[in-house]
Amino acid sequence: MKPARVDTKILLQRLIGCDTSNPPGNEAQAAAILENFLEPAGVECERVAKDPRRPNLVARLRGRGQGPSLAFLGHLDVVQARRQDWSVEPFAGIEREGAIWGRGAVDMKSQVAATASAVATLAREGFVPNGDLMLILTADEEVGEEGVGAPFLVDERPDLCPDYVVGEGAGERFDTPNGPIYLLDHGVKATASATLTARGRAADASLPDAGPSAAFELARLLTRLRQYEPPPRIQPSVEPLLEFLVPGAKGDEERLERARAANPALSLILGALVTNVVRATTIEARGPANVVLEEATATLSCVTLPGVGKRELEAEITQALGDGDYTLEVVEPEGGLISRTDTPLRAAIEEFLAVRDPEAKLIPTLGYGYSDCHTMRDAYGSIAYGFIPFRYADPLDNLTRKHGVDEHVLIADLDFQTDAALHIARAVGQARTRQTEAA
Image (cartoon, rainbow, N blue to C red; front, top):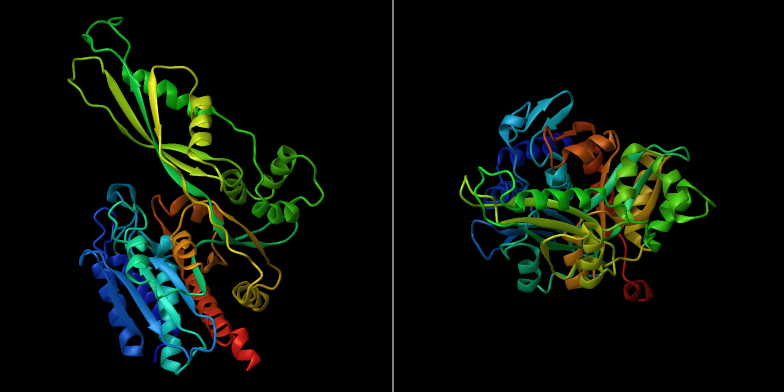
């Protein structure tokens, strides 16, 4: 049998070589690769699909029914990549400079490969957990508009109900003046979208003052949105992180400023954890080439703090935009659920770090973006954490490349993730339910 780390690397290269850019997704190819990897090891695999081209995959190592169940949660789709922007072919899984390069290497095929390798290794060893060990891999996580991914899965399989879930989210190692830390994402911000429509008046584009242009009005409004700086709002779930970075500091703005100075990558995350983030993602403006535009539209991606509703979000965006000739339509935010942190799953992660990176501390906090962990919390009541450990990567590199160009994961981090999954699965798999312990 090959060492697990070799299996993981080869599996990741095959998964990256399978183009699951969303849209259109076509996750069936990746599901087939994983079935071919897992089933010979003795792992049960089941596709749960609304569209055969876009299945979800559930892999299971059945337990004794005497302990909590654990699921490693991942997604098979990736964001699109423009080949001309990359220094390597984004769907080749090239090994270079001690890393595997390609779209999805960080988000999140490295964790998919690592957890699949861990589950297969445990199956080959004959490990029987007290509770079921699952690998839940979804379609359409990156876009989520086709109704084929996690929401469909939980409706079709209400029986899965994992007690504990480890999905995507935090896990980079940050060096700070108070020592290195890893973040544990135990909740997510909510997500919403808004449509901003700027208006103008049709006129001959040959005349400089014939009428106001919707294009210029939209540009003005988006500039105001970019310049808007809301005051920080510190959530209770972010307090442990701030207290570690700046113990005893007073005043939200001063605390945040000092905390953000601890690490440039951590600064990016902290900035997202204390505000509603509103960014323009798509712009549409159509009309004759010789006519001043009457209408221009921008779609705003909104990632809101837990508890923020539609009216509050609409009021904040309107405040940022100020006066102008426009309309704004906002949908109700979804998400924002938080899991407790006093669990055997957190203890298992801390035990792993105590052995493999003993100087580092694990800090629970809020996740800065959406993940399918929310669906697991909402549908099953699962304790769900986002945690993909990157021991060796520059966290700023990860944060700026995962939806950008030249995405890559260090092979050393791929090994680290595989070892983490093995440790977590063994530790939780050896736990027992209270009823069993009493008996």
